[in-house]
Amino acid sequence: PEKAILDNNSWYGALYYNIIDNGNNIFTLLGWNGYNAQTNQKIIEVLSFSTEGNPVFGKAVFANYPSIQTRILFRYSAKTTFSLKYEEVKMLIEKNRILKFRKGSRIVKRKFPLIAFNKLEPMNKGFNSNYKYYIPLTETINAFRYKNGKWLFMEDITIITEKKKSRKKREPKMNLFPKKQD
Image (cartoon, rainbow, N blue to C red; front, side):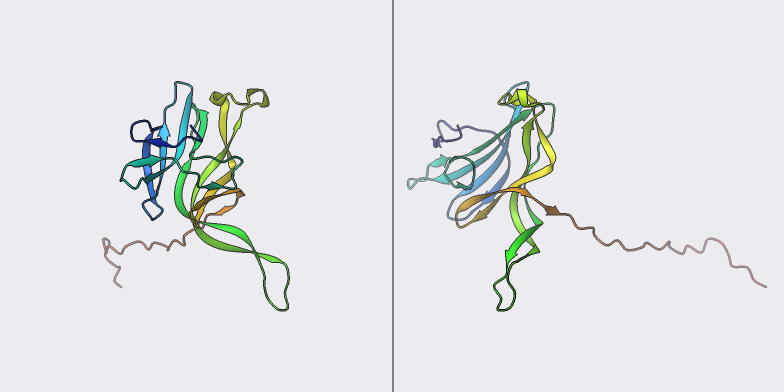
């Protein structure tokens, strides 16, 4: 299924919880599939339309990924939770300096809309390809970033969470007790 291009009569299917409009009548769908009693799946599916207006499921738009795929399937243990979200996040990136007197690179903070997800690994190396034993690594985040019509794979990214400044709340003056008078 990771390499198939399907139509409305034979599509992979999932419970889709997010639709991302990529423009030019191309949409990226994020979905969940209760694959079986021991394994769940989350899916990144690409929906486009033929010249006749019929839906086409799957498109080779995933770049820098280990293999060419038309959709991305994440298989993991049904006993765990796996996060697959589309959101604008702030992350650290290395930016090359192109200045007259400075060479090298520097780390900058930038906001990007990303499809972010945990890296999945088996609980034990002996369980390779047995997805009912795959769990997310909470400290390792991978992502896809949409650029020039492609979803670019980014491995081991650092997402920055910012603390919002909270104002000190003042207790309201109720004047419940009269002031002492001399």
